Length: 119
Image (cartoon, rainbow, N blue to C red; front, side, top):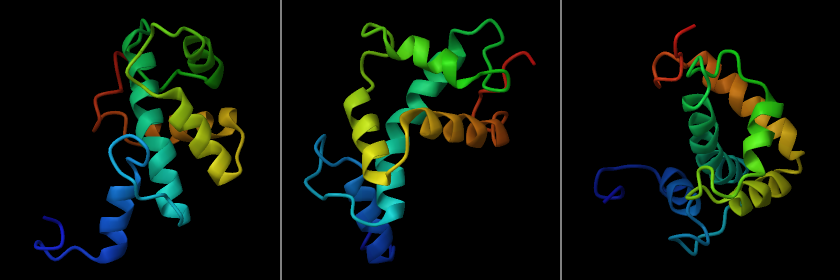
């Protein structure tokens, strides 16, 4: 479908590899692919964390808040923590650093993605 629409092969490969082990057998190899692989699941988890905050926002969220929810298997149970951890390892970054960077990136677009909340 993407090929027919004229998308470049590197873009198509990145899209395919972000679901590696879940719905695709295309392993992320390039940095862009690895980032997408790790952060796709993580943004969903961070968003879930924001929705249960009193502020419903990422603007006042810290890494430790995400890590508290991380330990609860019942919270955002559909998010694969294994994929996120594997993605962080593939990137050679600590999980807490990846979480912090993801929160900061979401702050930049909080209003556009519905994570500004009541702040």
